Length: 80
Image (cartoon, rainbow, N blue to C red):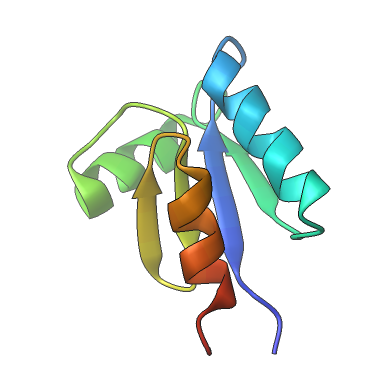
């Protein structure tokens, strides 16, 4: 089964760029949601995680706060 990966980002976040590059280097498909441009998504993100900082990455219902390559790979490798 394919991973479900959603990357929450902003236009000016250097760690978001690092996270995107890492996901692409690992061959992991993801959907990007820019919370700077999508205020409803930003509100949902805060309700879900209690955090507004980015990047936040939801991988198969697990959350990775910040750019953490090890956590990304751990959750992406888990059986769905």
